[in-house]
Image (cartoon, rainbow, N blue to C red):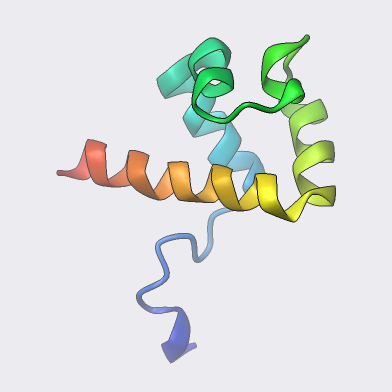
Length: 75
């Protein structure tokens, strides 16, 4: 457990990450920041989760954006 203490994503589900990012940025901006089809064409949490769970590089980009987002809102 000690190794997770400084992990900003510890305890946060991928679904919650998507919900938070979509609420803050919206699908259009998400699609501009991370160019993946599930954000640009008929976006939904469900389709995005399905894609991101199968695509490690895209999930990493989303997680990195979430960490940046957390820093922006928490100062």
